[in-house]
Amino acid sequence: MQDRPSALELIGGIYLFLERDVVPELKDPVRFHTLVAANLLKIIEREILSEPGNRLGEAARLRKLLSKERGSGDSPGDLEREIQTLNEELCARIRRGEADEGSRRKEIMDHVRKTLVEKLEIANPRMIKRAQERS
Amino acid sequence: MKERLQAFIGKQEGFENSRVESLYRMPGGASKETWSFDLVLTDEPAREVLPMVLRINRSSPLPISIDLEQEFLLMKEVYEEGIEVPKPYWYGEKELGNPFYIIGRIEGETIVRRLHRDDEYETARRVIPAQMGKILARIHRIRVTGNRFNFLPHRTQCGSSALGELSFYETMLHRYAPDSHPALELGIRWLKTHLPPSMGQSLVHGDYRLGNIIFGSEGVRSVLDWELSHVGDPMEDLGYISIQAWRFGNDSLPIGGVGRREEFYQAYEQGGGFPVDGKRTYFWEVFGNLKWAVITILQTIPFLDGSSESIELASLGRKTSEVELQLITLIEGG
Image (cartoon, rainbow over all chains, first blue to last red; front, top):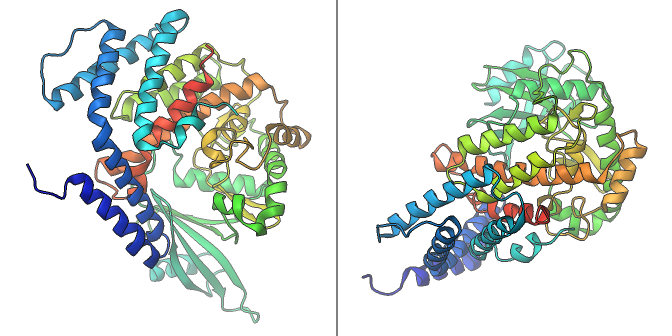
């Protein structure tokens, strides 16, 4: 186990350094790309905090949705592969028409929506409300 | 670069006595570099100066793009039709190492947040939706019969451009996406079961939106980025311009964050465009979200495979889910 500062604390420090010290010294296009990079640090920060829980939730929902047993391995890599396999299965079933109508459509749509919202809580929280509106 | 460019232009008829000046690389451009320069015609007493742009391939282009030569040929055709595009001068294959073309430089702005916010663009904000509608109508009115646009993609399946385009992007998704995307599969399935009946074919710009428009304080000056052009259903362009991604934060005005749908459609129809039908444009708006989601995935690939170090391309991979969420919201009702 590493000593302090933690990864999260370091990310916070780098973000402030970029925002306060670096960006004001720069001109476009490097300035713009530095802002993009700083924003990616914020994504990583949120991802460290939420992604482990999100993956457990996504895997559990997918197993229930597709009536699958829990995968055998326990490592983070096993979980990642299990989610990938389950998502491929879900895609194949959607292509076969399983989500075309009725309560099955609603179950699948609800799962997909929840997964996207969780991804956006990490990638771009400001878009969660907007992307669910029709205008 | 300057010497080779100078040598290439010096071989063009009527430009033997000219000099390249103020050459610099403009920001942006993922797979293509854009350079600005002035061409000084030295044999004329007035020393006329032509503002020019060079676009040259760098990394491998998106697999959905037409190549640079096709884009150049298309710009020549639409320029002759009087469409607002930079004047195309020359295409070259090898003289600068990679394929390139040279076109006139149109001064102005392309950055959408400036159009949305800056006081100097108040008039532009007001007039651009109708201007873009009328220009699009003129693009769609260009005759595509005969073999004039044979060099462009014309993707039809079972006589349907909609199915042809959809199958193309479905193939791109399955061929190139590193992850599986249930939301996009839901979108594809909805589109396949809501195909519009076929209608007249036209030239389709394919990426018609703010960001690809040069504007000034008075409005539209030029239409850029023809690399997704093809022959197909004209309503595709109307749906695409309406998607959330091209509103740049301002959903209250669905057309580019500057216009209402009705004013845009009306200007398009009055400008001689095809009749606009809400169901058709809705289909193509759903398709536009699918297409843009697939493009965000494709644009990230050069970062993933190491052929580009662009942090901007890397960040696009994390944009896909917001487009997917809008897409499933549009098809929620079944």
